[in-house]
Length: 188
Length: 188
Image 1 (cartoon, rainbow over the protein chains, first blue to last red):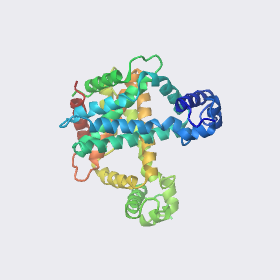
Image 2: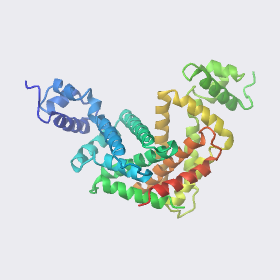
Image 3: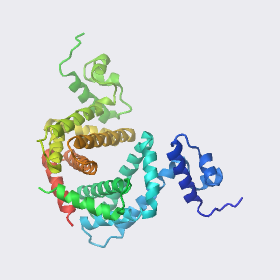
């Protein structure tokens, strides 16, 4: 058996999501995921620590994208520029070809309260990490917290629209629309 | 033994928070809480299902305040009026005399990841409930979600400032300040 399989993680991910949507997350085994992908369980475990990681591996990617985007922002950048940098960073993690996965993932999460809890914890962690990155960029703590909260709220709302049935706009455009709506709603 | 004790829940709450801050949440028993309040365990359990409820009973109060504020908003109210109504409702749950409790509660939560998870779930539940209340008030789903997200973000950030060491402004004033900052930060 070849130890290296071209595109193995992508095939495993796609098979896992198919099975989660067909039979439910709890009812799906790693053996079934590997079988549907035409791969072995050993190969599965070379790419994912467990079944849950198929759904949450992206958290690490997001965290890195956010941190890199914030540290790459121009010197002397103000709060708004730092917000835009983080939104661009997170937006780049969700290219058009990831939308189908994101939709199936949302269906899977919606059916399992324990996965929703895990998702809430992940988002809270990302927000905390982002606030710390903003402090490293010189924002005072209250401003860093406000900026991180804004980024995560805008991202979260835009993401919900991005995965909605029939939505065709891409994430960066939806994030800009949400920012504009927030601006209008917060007018004195 | 009198079945009714004047101010029993308040005394139990104060004793519990003292003990949580002194010895930690996990290390505190219901017997110790009751003893410090000069009451019996039986009395404790007449007011709280368990030790955790001392910290989370307020969630129910908040949910009701949010729902009532939204349903009491004037007929034909727009999204911004519905946001202000919810913020006023939630603001009224935290009068000046509750700040000391809120601070001690935050110290207790900060020391216990399991309590922080519970808090995240509570806030997510409140947000979901608020979005549903907004839909009942005629907002379309995306607008209801945006309004609920805005309320909960503004409340959360204002609350963090309200309980910060040395902060003297009250919650409604802090919420207005956060709204103004959000407005400035989201300008195109």
